[in-house]
Length: 242
Ligand code: NDP
Image (cartoon, rainbow, N blue to C red; front, side, top):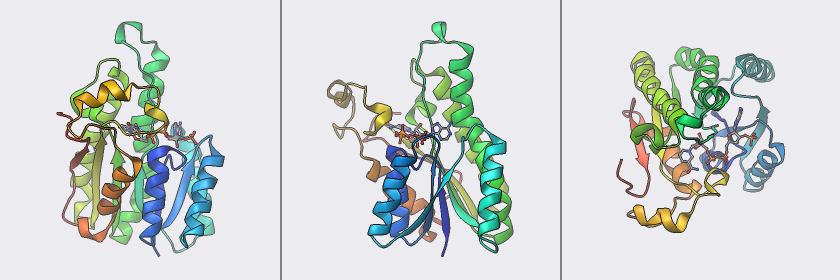
């Protein structure tokens, strides 16, 4: 049985990814930071559907916290490795740059970009040694197009896109693929304050996306069927021009 770690499994998109990967017989490691209740709820639903999973907690901005949590997991699961990593945890703090404080910039870079390095570097060696792995980074339309009010978030997500392309070239020979998924507007807590009625006029499919739709794409990238796709950024945005 293969293990898949989904960071931000307590959030809207993360929870849908956990559920979908569990339905493919992955044993899912549902990560949360502060919202244990939401992660637990996802785990209960997965188990009720006959899937397998467990919870893990860490702050993605702390390399030490991640290494502690992963070391503990490895002690409990000798001879196993986590073969799928979905770097999904994220956070935005929107502000026009003229008003942006140092902390607004740094916290968004830490949570969305440095988190990629912190988490991936703790699992990469095992994937390379075992000659199979999938790294899937949830980025954003904002990292491709750039969105006003999001210089911090656009920079962080664009940084992850660059890292995706570079790392894909480092580990392709070892059958480890690295791809990014770039959602547009998806209905979750992160977008709950946005005016969907107005924004959907810009979207050819004329609605926000659902977390389950993103999960379906991640499921494909996590599977053996995607073995010749690496270093790609795949948009999932209802046709919103990027
Ligand atoms: P949610 O707000 O629903 O979930 C965010 C998740 O990130 C939560 O599980 C949260 O954990 C976790 N998280 C936040 N900060 C930290 C931290 N410091 N350490 C560990 N975990 C943390 O957001 P979405 O599900 O919408 O977003 C998921 C991903 O998709 C993000 O990377 C986001 O940038 C990206 N995205 C979302 C879009 C959308 O329209 N919704 C569009 C484009 C990209 P907890 O709650 O347990 O603290």
